[in-house]
Image (cartoon, rainbow, N blue to C red; front, side):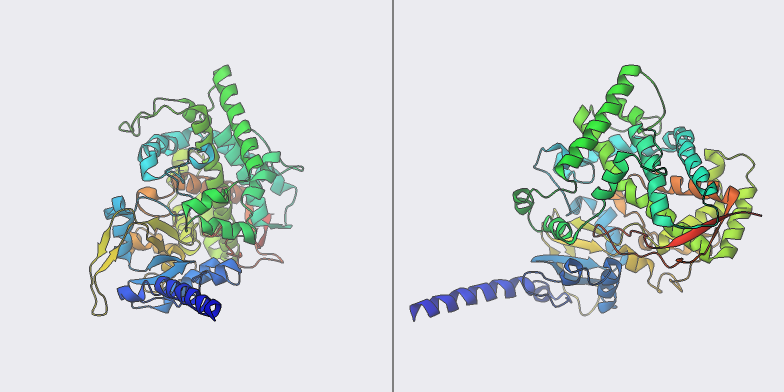
Length: 498
């Protein structure tokens, strides 16, 4: 009898605990999606039943007249923000209230692999590190890398000449090319991953960016509890892979320092301890040790590995299925007699095309922010009440869904570079176009990614047409690492132009 009473009492406590968590947003007068016990609204993501882009779009459309929606990452209340002005407040105007990511944010652990720029928190020197690293992606620095990137693209042009007219998996093709570019510009390692067998770091890079369902769940666990993260030793990269990469990067750093050679790449930049450049003289001087230098270079590898190759895969698909747009772009390319960094940056229609690719296929499905200081959202509509966000509350900002909202972009499924013409681009609210994130935490290498994409596209169109073939389908936007579009699953062919 007493045992049954005890069981009933414990069950009641568990129920009340779950009920309290799962009604958090309702009690704050915030419209919310109905959560399941323990897993909240993460069921479809955990089971991979739907693409993450579709899941966020479904959430976005569930309350079309609301500025925000309450959801739950397992037991963690999360505010899904729809309103552009509120997004601007969170990411820019009130950045000090939301200075951190929730995924892999770390202000306590001194393990080197948790000291990359993405993982650094406000207390761990993120701001100073960001300033230090900004100098690696200035126009002057990217201009210095023009020749290095161009040499990597030479391997692609040679590869295509051997496979003219044959359908190729665009994602696989550009991942191999991008590995060449990243290893060459970031690590100072010259290689050709388009040949078989590819460089060993290519295979390791694929493993780092390939996420099984279990690893997928473990990553989301980092948003729940840093204690749980430490207990399960959750990291983006398997220990042996991390050690191997760090050894390779440190080897490049030591060899460059020993030989006193200069290539104009990121290795040179990291070896320059001045911490400031002509482009950013105000950057605070930070002397990085070898581990810190290697960790930042490794972070650039992880961040750029998927982003650039996905951007190129989506670009090649859109050009293949929109031959009139490709024809106009080729005319602009053919009008450039000598390809330089300056002439590349001055190609206006190319910029329109890449901007529209990023609008339709943003690199990130959503971005997240973590509230670190109390933030008050004042009511603007009759059905709203004053909403106080306490420290620890997470926010999701749905880039993909906003970029495909017909309220901001008429016919959002249509690929239309004219949206970004000189005549039209001023009509686009900056708060509804942010393919690489928003505010001070935006992707540090966004301009580099666009730069590489533009250079590759121009080099291809100088000699080839990108055409449809058997297997040309809209690239799958199944997210491989929770928040990034993968751009996989589509084939295109390259034919020498007439």
